[in-house]
Image (cartoon, rainbow, N blue to C red; front, side, top):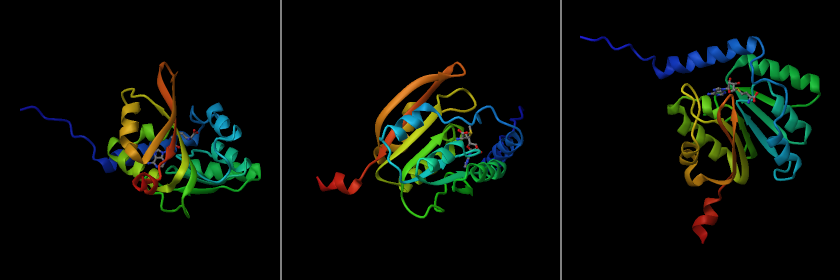
Amino acid sequence: MSVQPRRPTRFWQRWRKLLRFNLMYLRQPPWDTGVTPPEVIEVVEGGVIPPGRAVDLGCGTGTNAIYLARRGFTVYGVDSALIAILKARRKARRAGVHVHFHVGAVTRLDFLPGPVDFALDIGCLHGLLAEDRPAYAAAVANALRAGGHYLLYAWGWRGWAGIEPEEVKHLFGDRMQMVWMRTGEEGGAPATWYLMRGVDHSEMTAH
Ligand SMILES: C[S@@+](CC[C@H](N)C(=O)[O-])C[C@H]1O[C@@H](n2cnc3c(N)ncnc32)[C@H](O)[C@@H]1O
């Protein structure tokens, strides 16, 4: 009789990820470059996304949340890694801006005081467990006001993390409309920027 190795439960998989991220934030993880990507600068400074209420999903040490606050947004940053949020708060204090940083899961956005005009995710969704992705998509779609924008950067599937464009479209279904998609590569594998817009369902049903 062969003995199947036991798969860790979802609970332990989540804890393992949380522990791994916190340990990585004790030092400087490779993604924590302190540089806001040109795609974010393009939509913000190009006027596609005017200042309003924004949420940075999986904000890490706050580089992009702080950038948005400097550009006049009221910003909420959420990350489950306490160490990242402690660093983010210190960075915001040093930068002289106010950002509402929150330790929590991106699948639970009920800490937000109301709908957001802009949701940003750089590298968080593609690392979530497959089972957590529908809850994430529902939370983001509910948090975004109709006509608000959602900018996502996600790796394509690479064995241990990633999400394919088809899954992104499927997750959001008719709750988001794709504005543009740009696929490039990171580390020798595909990675995509997605700009989406929240759909107003009352308008859709009115016609
Ligand atoms: C690759 S890092 C990117 C961080 C940041 N967006 C940046 O560009 O520097 C992914 C981040 O998502 C956070 N994260 C992962 N799963 C999460 C979850 N379920 N809820 C909240 N944050 C999560 C991690 O702690 C980590 O800070």
